Amino acid sequence: MTVHLHRGDLPEGLDLGPLVAIDSETLGLKPQRDRLCLVQLSSGDGNAHLVKFDDRDSYDAPRLKALLTDPKVTKLFHYARFDVAVMRVYLGVVTQPIYCTKITSKLVRTYTDKHGLKDLVKELLNVDLSKQQQSSDWAAATLSKEQMDYAASDVLHLHRLKAQLDMMLAREGRTHLAEAAFRFLPVRAELDLAGWSEDDIFAH
Image 1 (cartoon, rainbow, N blue to C red):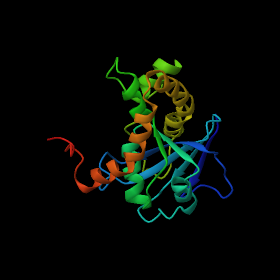
Image 2: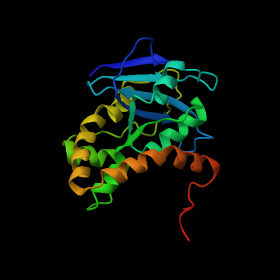
Image 3: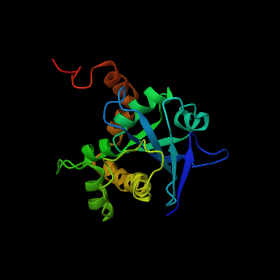
């Protein structure tokens, strides 16, 4: 595994292919308060690219924004709802098209209520992920090797995970439900940001 660290944007000429695994690290779980510090990406080749944002004035990132909005590139997330909202706030883009392994897991792994990435990767890929660096200072001027390795691990397995989940979706006849949910995700993220994060607008 090679982890490439970039400041402020992806490097010019980098082609990550038609399916890119993406995750983000922030200073907390409230997008309007807790700023975006890092975006990590992988093409599924075992390597990761980390884009670090040093301050609130460093979000220009034209190449990253172009990737997030490219209709020919599917953005592969685990819990896309949060990441898409964060990208909307700090990068000013609506990320699409999207695939979310957490949504897929909930559609096909109805035998469990454990849909975290660590649980998924352990069951379907027999890989143990360390979450030791999950709560750390992602705004630090210099990221530790442990932080970088942790950030990379969140995207390095998503392509293989998607392949397994896709087979389960097809087996259960729920692929169309997943695709519809993925299309709705940008709206779900917008509802979160507008104040409807807890309310079910479809409820009576």
